[in-house]
Length: 203
Image (cartoon, rainbow, N blue to C red; front, side):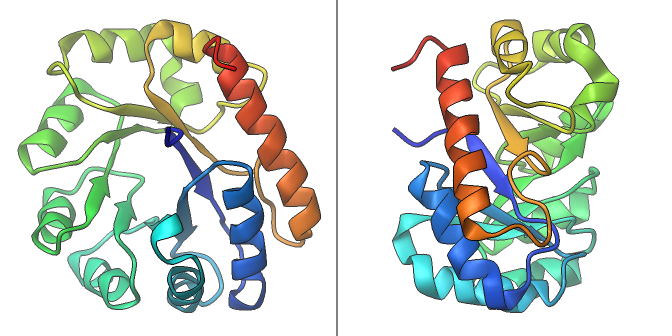
């Protein structure tokens, strides 16, 4: 079963991207995001896509414009994650057959994103919205809408967020920080996966 977790590799360099990506993948996280404010992000995406192939879904984060969507697609990315909700970005992403995960906080943003064709919604920053805020948004979303929490979610509160109804999570600094070795990242990834599974009562 594919885990509903996105590994956010903010700050990764092309030279280390594959080794770090393999470490995350080995722990069971099969969706990887390289934010566009990382060093040479498109090259990292290209290398990850070439190396991991069908074993992982690789894409970009912090995607803000339709032009960037095209660049990600050309680099082999198949996933576009944004910190905000811009229908033009969502529509460009879907036209190219990629998954679109825009950032939302309010119901208005959520419905604008869904109307534009979003694959799922990124509640960001989750720590600002909180559990009660997330539940209020969740209550009005169409059945089957995937809602991932990003920003302030981790081992310590996975259980609370899962019990409140979130579908998945994006993992940033708890998973990877610039300068960490693949071995460090592997250890952190394993701990996060174990905590996520435990929070859901999974083996």
